[in-house]
Length: 316
Picture: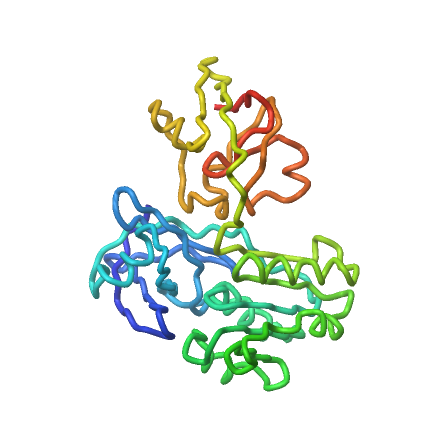
């Protein structure tokens, strides 16, 4: 872990807090690429991931955190308890949402706080002279973080902003957006699950190959749990078998038996807790693994996924 200090804390939109994090004692922070995130150890029990959104060549890190009314402690801690000169432990940057290194045109879709990983991607694209278009959605202008920055740095015809309140609650017409997207384009989308799913569906509809469709989820998908059932997990290393009840997760069952697995989001978004699956059929409920990875039944996210079979054998 890396120790950093909060050197600036400002509100950049309604309910969006922007932090500047500098290294302790003049140390150099690890370099990072567009799309990367870091994990913040906010308390001994709260570890959260946030996208880096500052300039790529800066000597500090920048993140922006939306206050979540359903917060499990992360966003409320950042907004209410972090102060100037507060010290934090953070991880090195990790990138699950990389920008492709080719010169293909890039089309970005962002909704709400989903703009954060997109900002450094746009910086890189514009520095390289790549064709760049952004569709940015928010409920109102006051809720659109970094809007002024984007208006200053992007050409007028490359930035398309949609405020639902100004359109009588109507969402962005995504199918119309895709009429202007070429088959050589790479599409990047970040925001609520429904927004991402709509963009991905339209990308597939016009025939874009999956490697040209890139996503970053900030919220888990809803799953019906009324039919959840009890099942067993077995550990390869010890042969021990544990019962996962209807209202418990695999992760919590393992933790109750003193088996530690690194975890961050606890919603199947970040991939921190992914473990190997040796036998059994998983009921995948994450948004981290690809469709192919889920079909292979070789990995599982124990924080949210369950079992369709009576037993799962875990590579632990």
